Amino acid sequence: MIEKMSETAREQLLPPLLENGWSLDEERDAIAKTFEFDDFVAAFGWMTQAAIWSEKWNHHPEWSNVYNTVKITLTTHDAGGLSALDAKLARKLDSL
Image (cartoon, rainbow, N blue to C red; front, top):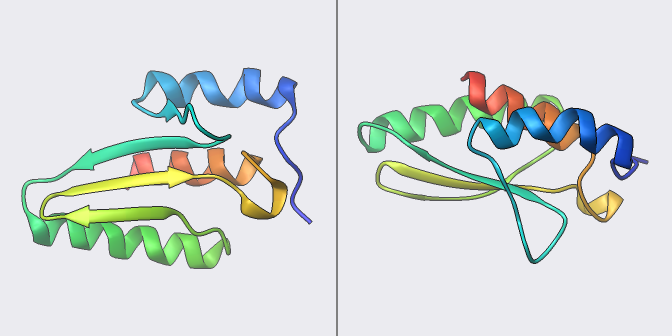
């Protein structure tokens, strides 16, 4: 079972993500970010890459897509909040 992120891990893993455009969800233990692309094809291509990594790591985002914009929320439902997997996936999504 995946464990919820400790306070020490939060202090190490979250600041770089927050500096890179991620934000803490004020209503629950999650992080969120909006990605914008040139057009729908670019957004969908990025989502396809993200889906492959998500499936590989068995960690799936909550997301929505409207034309060139993808909104993502990451949390680990099994842990009841943020886990190290959320930080790992956020870093990967930023690098795609």
